[in-house]
Amino acid sequence: MIWKQEALNVFPRTWAQIYKPHKNDKGEDVNGSPESVKFLEECTKKLFVMNIVENDYVSGDLNKVITDFIQIN
Image (cartoon, rainbow, N blue to C red; front, top):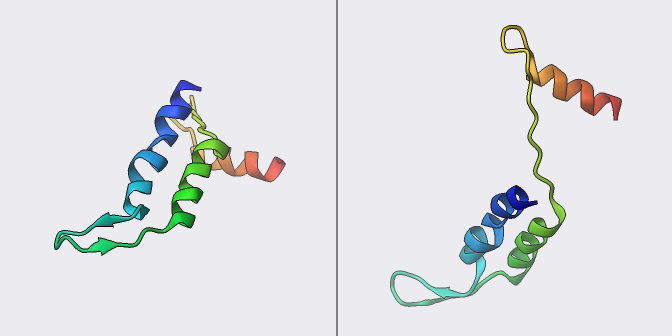
């Protein structure tokens, strides 16, 4: 859960800042996009972080492992 919070908090803390109302370099007001901010905040709550490891370092094929997994499920 700690990795999830760290990885996914980039959405509301960094990317959402772009879509909030702010002033540009000229001091002009820039309208925000509340829908975009809401979407990015929801990503933090609904997405999962996965770590997939292929332990066959010599002849492993991570793409095949992932493709096979997707086809099975």
